[in-house]
Length: 505
Image (tube, rainbow, N blue to C red):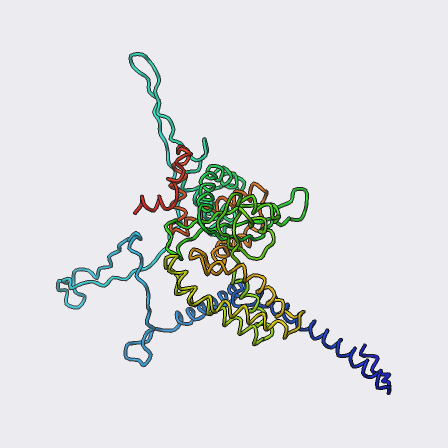
């Protein structure tokens, strides 16, 4: 089109037509450039932005290198004397924990004075503490069972072995808990754990560790199912999903599976139920999976706009609560890439809603409703009307228009929180529950099989529920694995992390 300008016509009609065509092409190219800039900014922010884990890791590496260099210089520099203008650097160290074992080493100057050989008497003492590390140790529990015989009837007697998590297996409950927590909470793949144990002189093959995890999760599955039932007993829950890789047998490639998270967290409105996180694994992202997981649930579900959740909602089913954090995120992306004043104003107005939520946190549901209807509802209504007014003024194909249309499509489904104090403005509880999955998949890369994915979902359910209740997951799982083999299935609720916390207080 631009090349045709070389043969400029002198006919005014042709010139006007050519100008119209040129204006249309320029506008089309401007929209394309705007769209590409928006996409590029999004990719850059995802890869290099302040919230990007890759940049965080890079910053940590630089910070560590700088700290090491500074420490090396300081170590090589003689300590200045007290009468110099540069006093020693002051430290603000926290005291070392009291529970750590103390090994005392007394460094005495002797009993006689070096100058006059007179007797020394104690005036006091200075204590300096040095933090040292001793690698964790394996121990062997030996069960010695004497075989005895009656002197009269010659009958044999021997005490039975205590129940163990894996029948005829060698690992104790503490070791099994350590393996699972190391993989799914500390993100250490099993092959790395095998290498770590080998350095302590204990050879345990990765396949053996995988077998232990599989057997343990089979034993723990009823407990995870019980947590799932507690999640679905609430008035509201948070739902989300994230992709994970799974090996495809007979294929050199992996396939994309999903882990779904369903969270019940009533702490923002002082609910009495303990917080719980329930994870499920599926080999794909079909909408039939959340429908199956939440079959019979009739409360409210906080969710993003994924259409796969649509089957969960409807008459006689659950009600939908949209996520305003997703709405805000669209405008943040536009503002970051284009500096749009409209996007900036939308972000400012949404921030007013979150300011009210900060005030409402911890209130009872009825008080939250009163506060929201007084302060949030006018802001919500004005935001919706303002977005409707902005849409006709901008190009319908621009990223800003797409963000506005997304907001206007989701806001009617977000109004429920104004009249229900047990609802939240966003789905952040579920998104927080996905962070361990995101960290873990960067280390173990893929699930070995569908059964492996199911085992991972069970362990994530237990570990993340323990963490939500501020319970040490390794201590709790050790306690559970020591008991669950002999525990009655109809009393499984007695093994929940909050019960463990109550017993150990």
